[in-house]
Length: 297
Image (tube, rainbow, N blue to C red; front, side):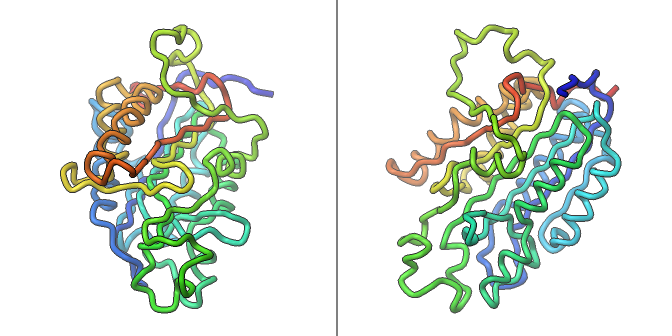
């Protein structure tokens, strides 16, 4: 059954940012900095207050598929029921595989022959196994990644001629809905899809700090890109999520709502009136709001 966890005991995190790629995938300007900034927030005593030895930071050439898997394993072995586990990824997504799955590209993801891209990235199956085996009852998975043809435009022969099967434009992001992704990763039938914040009408009890559960946060919806910003020097969503968490004392819902409000505004302003990026959150319980910033007990 669903036995609520006790007070937060220990806190663990794996923070991954991949902006440089070994095999010709286009670089991301701020993915490594996204990871550094999120790591800095987590280990700051005034921020997440995570013990430094409990946070694994992997960037660029260190963010290989094996290293990410080793990091997941280390947390899976250590985290107990009353703990908090946070996974953060800033990278490219793979093109959808034949099952529609979009995976996370690592430094050494292979792109030739083309099907290697799915075998050499962090697949939904890897995340699913981790999520289902971890004992921690508070888990937050943050994905600032989306699929875009543009990421693979320099890899000769990677995109089919005309790109029809992958969407027509360079910027066309393709992927399944976050609910669908969460359903596969969490293995849950009944998921709670976050609705736009209705601050005034939410009774305090529904989303108090006593919440727990498994939460998937995504920087963009299916078919949207996740944008980087020259003015913020970060991915737009990651920057606003960190700001929101800082301002709310680490409360997940407030931090996410802050980012959800500001991300689409800045993306329209910087990238064009017709460009949308809509952060998504999906959880396996209604009362999922929890503190990242509470002191470890």
